[in-house]
Image 1 (cartoon, helix red, strand yellow):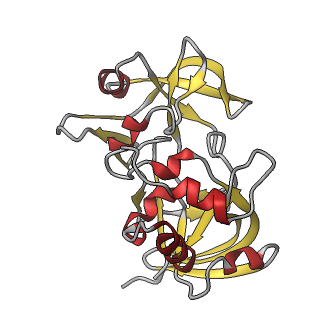
Image 2 (spheres, one colour):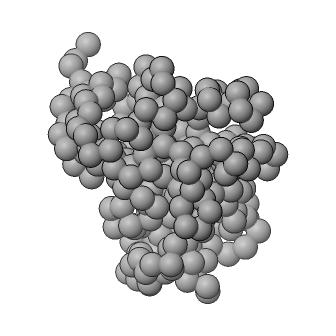
Length: 250
């Protein structure tokens, strides 16, 4: 059954969001915020800051709550401070607004360095397209090839917006340029256009709950899958929203 997930704060725990609202740009609230190293003008990325994964988030009526595994939390409406800065994100500049509130202090303590919570323009701290898709058949094939048999229970490693049930591994790559309708429980029908394959990095080897390194998934992919010019193997596909329809009331 298709499922949808994302993180409200870039790099934090990727979680299922069954009640999400989806519009033409993707899920509302998807990576709406990020943590910033102000001195270096850098957006924090999970692969360099794996402790981010252990932070969970919720966003309701404008109130953002961040919770740590030890039970500490910070909750409040992230209010723009009026401070704007240009940061580097994957070698491209993004304009962010720093926020006031308790979230930055909690994150700084947890990460062991000063950071600020910032609000991003829609899609600015999203690596690829507004949607990313992985499929169960492709994950099963990778699980068998790598010996990492629990992979289907760890789909959050791929941090994909949509997980689709399929029978044929990598069939999603043959859909490029096609429009596909996906019915997501609790969200409704999404008509999406399939785009390019997604190049993968070392984040795959981070446990999606603890952030600890310890799998050989990236190495397995690199040995068995097509790669881009940088040697990064492909897994999953980008997509864009063409049309949405709300789920019927139950």
